[in-house]
Length: 186
Image (cartoon, rainbow, N blue to C red):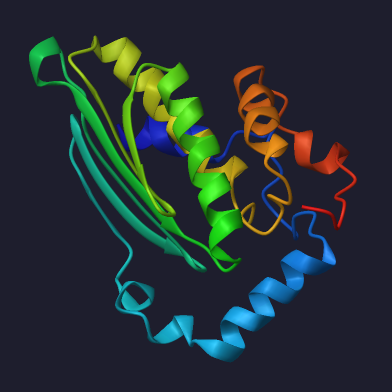
């Protein structure tokens, strides 16, 4: 399962380095959040990153900047035991932009058959009882999803981006963000 998750995260079609497009309002929301609160003092900011792995199990917990993600999965031959459970939350931008990103992620996961729940900027999702091959494929998709949404909370400048980002990911247009001219209008 870890190999599948990493294959998705390292998909060469997804840009992995450099900043994402951001408008002035997005930049200012990050600066304001730092001025008013100190995100580094939040408990989850200090949570460790780790992976517990075996040939059929992975629990990957990672703090990447202001984002916190957990993937817990079992992927074996017994269909009834297979599952993927995930949590994704946080971000440096304002609440509205983090909430938009959460809804975009949830829409993608819904498309791939996950049951999802969005509460604020947090998404929980679960997929159960799939074949080993399907569970592996879904773990790769989750890895791509985590990489695709890196630093994207600040870029979610308008409500219409929720659907547009979902559609881009589903059609594997991973260069979507690089093609956007981010407007300063929400």
